Image (tube, rainbow, N blue to C red; front, side):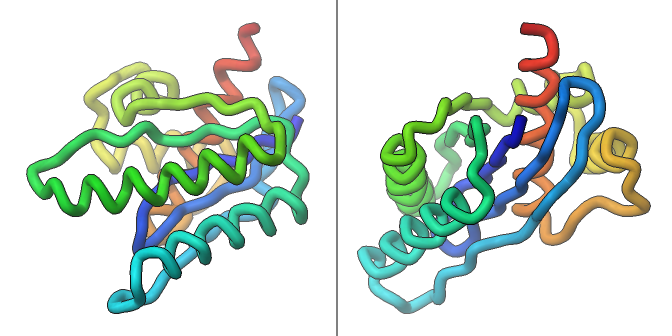
Length: 158
C-alpha cells in the first residue's frame, strides 16, 4: 500500500510518500511545497492544488493522511491554513483517494503512545520506524512522515 502524508499550510506544505505491506515500511519521497510570500492567496492556493495533483499522479497513492487544523491565537493564519487544506482535500477527493484525518494529538498517540509527545519524541519514533539516522527536514516534511506512519499503523490493525 502506498500512503501520502500531508501537513497543510499556505507558505509550506509538507508531504511524504510511504510504502508499506503492514509490517515493513519504506519512505519513497519526502519534501515540501513552498509558495512565495507576497503572492496573492488565490495564486498560492492554485500552486498548492496543482502540486498536490502532480504528486498524486506521480506516486499514485492508495490512501492519504492529512493533519486536521486547530485554531491558534492567530486567526488569519488559521484561515490561510484552512484554505490551503481545502484545496488539498479537493485534490485528494478529485483523485478518489481514501482520506484519513488526524489531529496533532491523535498522530502523536499513534506514533509514540503519548498524545502529548514533544517533537523530539516524534522525530525519534520516525527514525526508529524507518531506520533513519535523522528525521527529515524541515519540520513540515517530518510531520508529513509522522502522519503517513500513523496511517500505516492504523491500517495494520484493520
